[in-house]
Amino acid sequence: MSDLGTIEGAEMKVEVFLPDDYRPAEDEPFMNDRQLEYFRRKLLAWRLDLLGDSRDTIEGLQSGTRNIPDVADRASEETDRALELRTRDRQRKLVAKIDAALRRIEEGEYGYCEVTGEPISIKRLDARPIATMSLEAQERHERREKVHRDD
Image 1 (cartoon, helix red, strand yellow):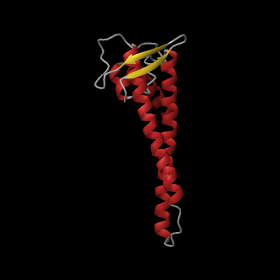
Image 2 (cartoon, one colour):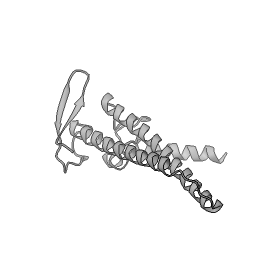
Image 3 (cartoon, rainbow, N blue to C red):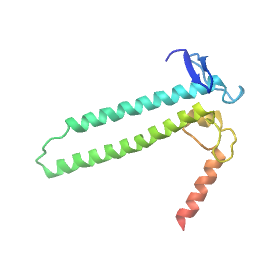
Image 4 (cartoon, rainbow, N blue to C red):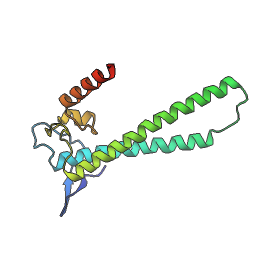
């Protein structure tokens, strides 16, 4: 990871110095250039990791096709492959959420709750950089979902 990142605005590009040991803090201005660059790099690294896993899976599935005479062994392998494909599908959806978070950074909307418009805590964003709701809004959403699911 290099020390300089780029944040593109509507009119200009700004080079942002970011020390390797930088961690966003609650006592600095919310979503300043350094915080935005920190989360941008974190999201990009996560995305790269997920895409690498997907490539490995595709290569494994392509090279792993073989004729297994034992029915139980074949069933076991099919189950493993189905599980792997489900995992990759979840990761594909996660990549889409990462891409959406990167767009929010570009548009200046990153870090703010889509329900209340209030800032999402730095601690929450650091733990889940794709978060779109504050913890309180997320909990309300999940309670409403649970109530409707029980109907």
